[in-house]
Image (cartoon, one colour):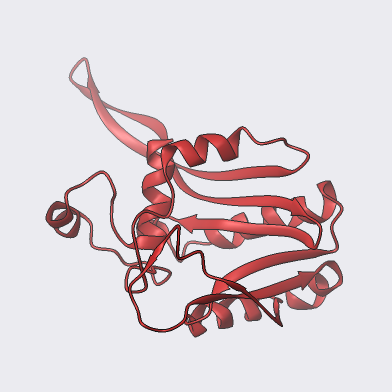
Length: 196
């Protein structure tokens, strides 16, 4: 769980929550274009929240985790031996609701973005919402002041519903004077054939 928390916080907040602020900047500059660090302060998630989400009723929620193989050369008898290990690289949470299946906590390790992991995670989440939950729509909440994210999802078949929800300022501390809120986007099952 700590590695998963680290990736979500890197992707959303731009820093490694396990490192000191200066150490995090030196050791791993954030290349994520998804970061909200200029908009919101504090962690996006915690280990306790992730444990709660993973333990959710599978009829109402599912948490998908992407792992990638890494190779570690270990010396054995004077010879280098390649050992395959697996590392968490991303995740997506899907939850069943009255208005459709919500897709959230979508994060890919910034060092592994642009490799297709996000596209595969999103496809798995959408398929689960349609096939397992039986919902007709996938629902996304996108921060209002992120036009590049809105455009990203619209290119993937999501439509802006012109509905909004308040930003949970009591949970996450906004850093900007703008009135932050969520814009609600939806992708309908019938749109997948034309959108992909």
